[in-house]
Length: 543
Image 1 (tube, one colour):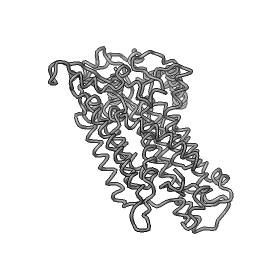
Image 2 (cartoon, helix red, strand yellow):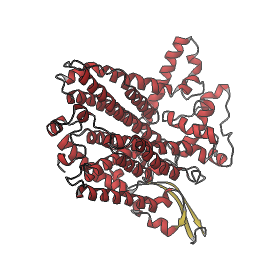
Image 3 (tube, helix red, strand yellow):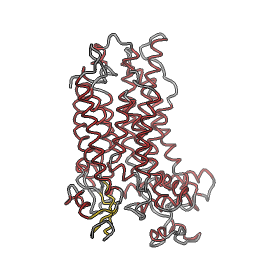
Image 4 (cartoon, rainbow, N blue to C red):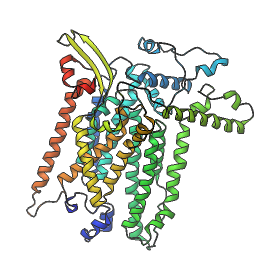
């Protein structure tokens, strides 16, 4: 598709756009206006979010079982809200919990506190979030899945809004939110007390904050350019709360799982590159020096100091308790406040190193483990739950399953969209294509290092942070396919736009049908074994 056909033409692409938009104001070129009403810009995404939320919350407590790795996180979460740290539980604690018991802790005395501290290999924030649901609704399947369902639902709203901002189209924003609501892997993880949906949310929230910050920074630059004497470097842009918020979100992503670090580094560089581009777009003589002097100090605050403080804050329970793993409380409290701080940090760093060593050496074989190259092709989904039954579904043999797998129509379509985005970025250097490709790469490529050098145990659901950016790729390509909202001389819309809208609508309908077909094996619906088998599209790999 030629650049002149793009619905995003001349949006922050001076090399391509300036010559094509000489009659447009600087403001319209640097900050394209948002089409549609502000009201529908919220109502549309909220309606899509409501649809996704209903899907996720209906029958959330089913199956009434401990599903896959819920056995670790729901107990750690309950320990955090009761003790501030993770503690060791009794044998068969899962059975006790399902029987309604909450006294599941291993007995210990003051002298044996170290034996009661549980060695955990992920930071605490995701478990704190799971624990909030348990605090509200109790230690039961609904309680420990509530936070995941809430965060999964909110991520639909965040994606719809950020897609709207990136495309300047409420319709395309709703399209993005709908696809996320219909993705099978996102749906399953939104109904399971694992950590990965929280990681995905904070990464997406950080990205959204940076996109808003990009617009806000450009608005200030244009206002300065229009109302103040022009200088070679441009102005200092003042406080940038959205970029500070992005730093906090990135810290929270790392406070769920350390794999958030790759996004933190990449997003920091991306934000600074956007600052370079903004100063160049308004025609400053020395845009790079201006960004280096005016924007870099705030970027360092947003992406180093703020994330460090936010990350450490999530460990407050460990620092404030004598019961945490490796805490060495007696030693830390033996010689005054300064030694307490020093020794506590030393113990904490030693603990982090043990966790790092664990992850580097994690090579245990698992029947559902997979390699990163298999993830986009859905070659090895994860059976979160399976139970065979008889004579309860209108047939002799029945199945009740939760399969962690993406919606194929969305995932396979995203592969084509990502290839198209590469071509678009090479031809136009459009910032949206570059940002989406970068975020997708940070969710995928680092895992190849662990697969090649460490032979690490990995699973398909590690790909969940990639999913919002897969959908953004689909959304951007949908915008390119539909084309610009420019009527012909007769006032009619171009036939190309009508056909493009029909193709995009048909694709959304296919995604809905595909999700509906898979839904019984995503939600533990009891169905005949033959119907379960029919949904195993690559059955030799999926069972």
